[in-house]
Image 1 (spheres, rainbow, N blue to C red):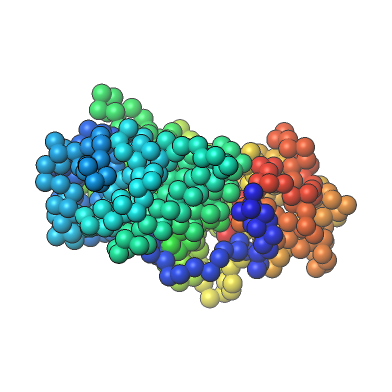
Image 2 (cartoon, helix red, strand yellow):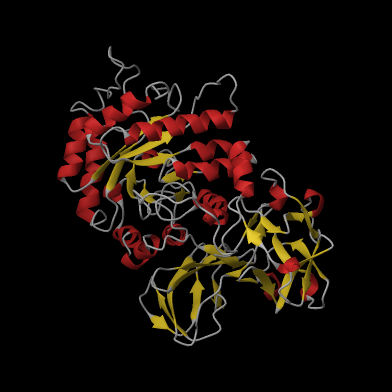
Length: 524
């Protein structure tokens, strides 16, 4: 399709930065923060539920820390529009109406967010915005709405359009309607989530930034079950981290990947798991949108969510999403470049027992590392991390460091890594697919347009991926595309035969249309 063809024709200005179109000053220059009712209450809420949680955001100090957008999710409206075709609030749930809610929130220094759907009906069966985009945008503006979450349930089939084209048209119409509404409204798109698991997911991720400021790109976070309040939700947090962490190339100021709500401090999350989610979301420059009963958060949970140093990482103005430096099945090490030259570093412990570990994240120079949980500083990035916990540091490189080049693992969609086979350094040593181990032969440094490990360069030798002495030749010049292709001489780095077995050779092959065995996540 046309979007993909255009994308494939664009070459990155450098290996380190995928090409993006020149954009107007962003509406959401940093990831949005706030609260949404859905993951805790689903449809079981009223006006008082919303306003009580808003009051609690202010009372706990979380609003002052940045959690200042209060969004009402699905099930807020009546089952039908009024005689003029306008959306109306459910009068039983919202006796004072939506304009009152908006005014209340604004009077308390908060922003007002609301939910709708691009289809004929919302996911809960309420009126959608299909064929009413401008009318609904004007309605929201009149209520003082500052943030719109537009879901993607129940879009009809349109003759002559693919499903993706229908979604793209609907979200484009909503964006245009918001622009004409007379009010600046942050636009959260759910389109990518409806294509997760399909190759077109990457195409959708390439166009959503034209229309909105953030997008839900995958499975929802697990919701709270009041009948099973302690049912673990940790697996859901890991799953959403897993699909969000490899796609940082789509994010930047005004455009944010959204792995869904923060449920830290809510039922089904231990204190260590809650700290992990906050740290991981901050490392991924993710929107920090809390979904819980704020009035029942423990002081410890409030402190976790409101940790000013970690919020500062999330809100860093450079807007670079962090990437995985190394993972070995038990620990994941992530790093994120920050605007002032510092780096945020996090170590996730997936395992069932505590681990003591350390890393340098490729810094072969002096540095100072501040533990953002304890506030302590040292000259090492090391910690004993509890089961399901995450250590997080802010690292200040010393004057002897010079320019820090991106370094870390290169992972494919199979979850396995690009590996210098057997750690060999002889010219012609094959490069293969292998489980991620965190070892040096999977640690690739991006230098200019070259990709290097163990002092040698990734090279194209008769369309086979090999390691070779760096010589600046064309066979060692790579460009990284927005859709995740790593390209040399017009050919894509490819897992031979689309395989995923350990040791499958990597080759150079004709680039396909978002072909999964040609999509890679590189260090930033």
